[in-house]
Length: 294
Image (cartoon, rainbow, N blue to C red; front, side, top):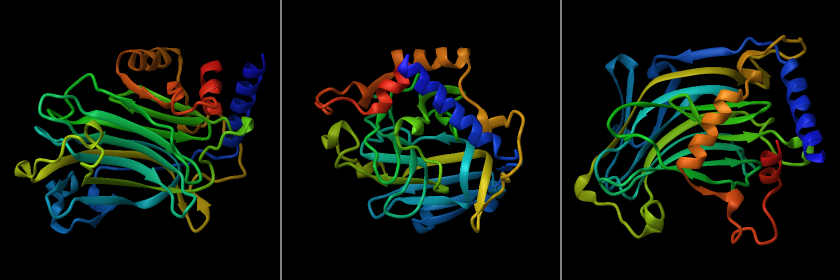
């Protein structure tokens, strides 16, 4: 009964938050020249096809990366990625939202490379005020190097949903009313990078990067974002007006998508911090119990 009341309170808080936002979010997508800037790697990062395609590459000297021109406070983001093919062991392709400062918030997709024929590991994490340790990892039900696939982040006052080709793989609900930190106050920028992490990425660092396979290349296309742009302390989703419905700002998982989430977690999840008793001998983090109860 207490868990149910807590879940209801959390939902009510999120609904109240979203009802204060007039749903006039900004929509972006379609051109990397307009939406992003290359931040490191020099000519290892390239925008091609009149802005329709972006590629990152990694060699022995350096990786590469880019970031969004805009900063967001809540967002629904889709990006199509085609990951490094072949022997990608030791490489990490990242795609994440992150705020600035020493007590940052962050919402992570990371793709950990592997030997030819072995599956990629999809690594997810959520940081609040500089603290993460909320890892969930998955294998995918397809080869992410053979074609482009859509990886999505929905971040709104109710929670965070990670999806792959429209199928949810992880949900992190807003349980602030129960004392669990949740990113609601720090605007975040979208980042992506390709870099060498062979000290930990593949089998805990046992498998090193084979530089004879370099350059390693990851490709991006079809960026789409419904977002609340944050600029000079003001959100493009105006405050002070009541919104009926609220679109993606109040979106959560319906029963069908809840069942898809359970299917993924039952068949493809390979690590969940919420079941790692050795790591948390004093008890699991509170959101683990709250999410199960909800």
